[in-house]
Amino acid sequence: MLILAVDTSSAAGSLALLSDTAILAHRVTSGEEPYSEGLLRETKELLEGACISFDQIDLFAVDAGPGSFTGLRVGLTTVKGWAEIWGRPVAAVSGLEAIATQVGRMAEPGSLVAAVMDARRGEIFGGLFHRGKEASARLDSLGDEVVTSAQEFVQSLRPRLLGGCGLLIACVQPEVIRPATEGQDIGCCRIEVVSSVLAPFIGQLGYVKALRGDVVDALRLDANYIRRSDAEMNWKGV
Image 1 (cartoon, one colour):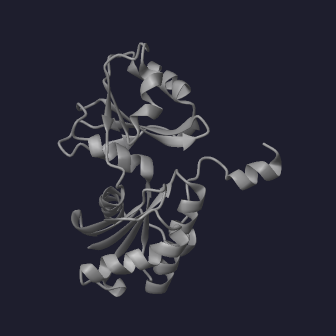
Image 2 (cartoon, rainbow, N blue to C red):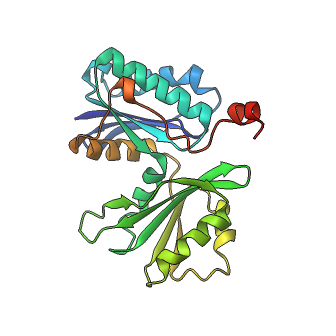
C-alpha cells in the first residue's frame, strides 16, 4: 500500500511517502513560506524524487490535530482535494499519537505514555495512552485529548499512577512540561524528547488505521482542533 502522509500541525511540518510501514522518502517543509504557498510544490518534489505519481497513491494519511489552526486547515483542505480527485480514502491521525508512538517500545508493558505539545498561551495539548502487554507495543488512547496548563495536566495524571504504574512523557519541546513535573509526587516518571518530523509516524499509524477500516472519504474528513481559533474566540469575546 502506497501512502502519502502530511503533517502541517506546526511550523515544522513534514511529508512522507511509505509502502505499508516502510518509509520510502520524507521531506521537512522549509518553514520559510506559508503552507498555502509551498505545500503543493513540496509534495510534487517529494513524489517526483521517488518516481511516484499521485494516481499510484492508495491512501492519504494526515495529521488531523491538535495544532496550529491555520496549518491544520491548509493541510486538511489540501488532502480533501486529493482524496476527492483521486477517489482515495484518508486516515485522519492524531498528532499526539504520532508523538507517543515514538516511545511506545521504550515504555514498560502495562505502563502509561503521555504525549504533549506546545499549545501557546501558557498551555499544552496533551493525550494519555496505555501500552499493552503484547509484543507489538501498541498504544491505546485513554480518554479525550485536552488543552490545559502543564500543571493541570500533570495533576490529572496522579490518580492513574497510584498503583505504581510507570509514566513516560513524550514531547518535542521538554521545556513545556518539565517544570510542571519537578517536585511532584507522580512516581516513576521519565521525559523523552522525540522528533518533530511527524509525517513518517502519521503514515505508519495511517496504515494501521486502514487495515482496521478506520478511514474516511473527502466529505467526512475533519480536524481535531480541541481549541477554537483565535478569530472565533475574539469574535465571541472569549
